[in-house]
Image: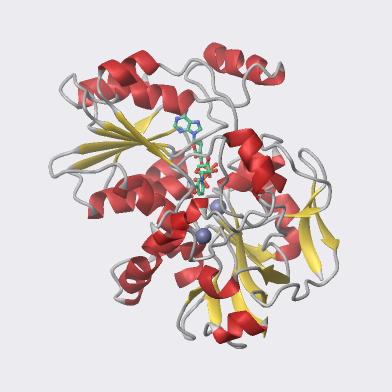
Length: 391
Ligand SMILES: NC(=O)c1ccc[n+]([C@@H]2O[C@H](COP(=O)([O-])OP(=O)(O)OC[C@H]3O[C@@H](n4cnc5c(N)ncnc54)[C@H](O)[C@@H]3O)[C@@H](O)[C@H]2O)c1
Ligand SMILES: [Zn+2]
Ligand SMILES: [Zn+2]
């Protein structure tokens, strides 16, 4: 089959790889009908995530049709022909963390849990197409995909209607939702969102639905800012004004009650010189990320407020203003998204027509064009916000 493979930093290729097979009775195989490129994939492309290996199959936002089922998965109700969205993480459904709904840190699905413990002190769930520290599982930018722990992992969706209606249940829709939900928005709150990428767009949507009085969206990419404005956010173009000063001015001098970092590890700014410091420090391995949006979010946040961090971080960040966080009494909430915690509610909202997640899609192309689309998406060229690939 054809799949999109990581062949080193900035080297993504469409290659022929062996078809996946059932390896365990809990497995299923799906024929992928749609799959996406995520901002998280850019961190892999750009070499920010450790433990990638040459030839790793990328992708963690797929959906498709079940074409083969192992005996245990079938006994738990998964059948050939089912139409499923595949969340980016595998869940066992039975461990202590799964029982508490902390699916992104399922204790059983990461087959390289020891490596994760060595890096992070405890394990994450197994993730698809996201390095060996999260299990080294083949991803879903491919014609077919093996789903370990299939019956407890997938989200079944109705047979009718376009893939695009359901596809983002795999990651970015619940991720935007969790970003807003964990911010603890109260009526009257102002929510500032760093970034206007796909994750941020859904965080903006969720913040408004969860009762924010006002959302301020921060980026410097005009069409992304415009998309946020169309959703009802006030926009702050970080290339035209000082973010911290402007946020204070917009909020009576105190700052937003809830601040969401939907940028993560590869943020730009706040000025060319300050960005250069983080670029030099990452090049020298003195830190592994550029936590520019996170620093701003902590500094901007109103006392007793919340900083919610859906943005991905991988290792060590320098110069995090802990003094501001501590003395202002901030709550910091972060994490990979517990996709299944939100999937049923979001699926219902989609079915009832309350949410139409398709507005973020700007490009739909055949799978083979993925390498070129990774670059277009990374460089924010051609108005690119979200790419859907068709195997
Ligand atoms: N927690 C999770 O489970 C989870 C899931 C999916 C994605 N993510 C992460 O969410 C983040 C966003 O993903 P995406 O797909 O929207 O990515 P994206 O690359 O499309 O969007 C990032 C946006 O941030 C903007 N930006 C850069 N520096 C900025 C700054 N200093 N201030 C404000 N905006 C800035 C960019 O211009 C861009 O529009 C990534 O880090 C991704 O890895 C996390
Ligand atoms: Zn993703
Ligand atoms: Zn589990």
